[in-house]
Image 1 (cartoon, rainbow, N blue to C red):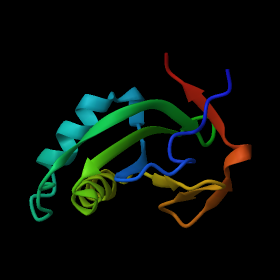
Image 2 (cartoon, one colour):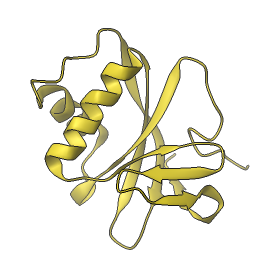
Image 3 (cartoon, rainbow, N blue to C red):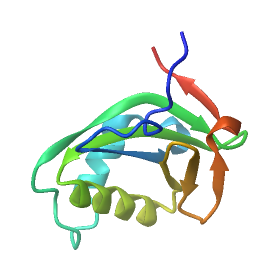
Image 4 (cartoon, rainbow, N blue to C red):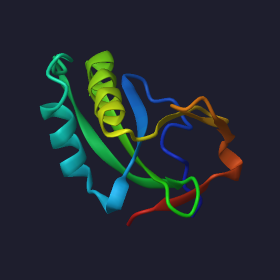
Amino acid sequence: MNQHIPGSIEVEGREFFYVETPNGEVFRKIIDEALAGSPEVPLPKSGGVIEEKARILLDGSTSLLGVSYKGDLAGWRAKLVAYCNAKHLKWGIVSPQKLALSDGAELALGECEVIFDR
């Protein structure tokens, strides 16, 4: 079975975001900290966030966890970006052909190693 990398196919009303996971932190902890942190960034007004069960490996020590959200897309994105910035973590956005990283790097999706959780 050939799986698609979450975000490589557009889904109306949903945005895909990849966040660096230091020390194997789990989805729930990341989201709890993102929502509780950066009080200057308002909480999303609607929608929700889910784990996509996919990780993109950048090198031997950096792994990005795929999440997606719906509803207040700008609000969810702002909270996740603020969390990453506060923790000095990389983040990325996937498009059909590439992964654009927060540090300005762009990687071809075909060259990325992706692990799908079952």
